[in-house]
Length: 125
Image (tube, rainbow, N blue to C red):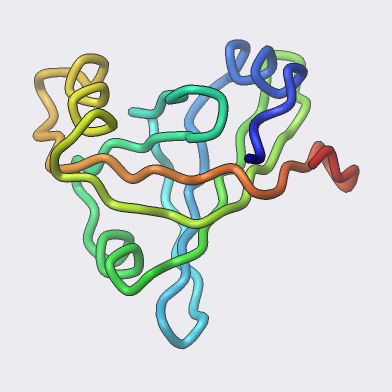
């Protein structure tokens, strides 16, 4: 089972600003959004709260592959790629409801399964 390298877990804890969450539709057309309501779930999932998804939700429901790009306070970038699943109930959803601000609807949790990890052009996993 692939998981975030320890160095990337530490970098995630020093994230600066929103992440860029990208999905693709069934024809391969990408869609990228900024997301601020994000968290790790264990060592192998990055979770984005679906507060206001539209195309992103459609892409995930079509079986999208995705990526999350983030930067640290030191301005070092990391990209995590993997399969995205959509959770309207269950442990991932319940966890999202704990950290997603109450002012947002939290319709569901989009969970990106760690499969590849990069720092800049260097492949870490």
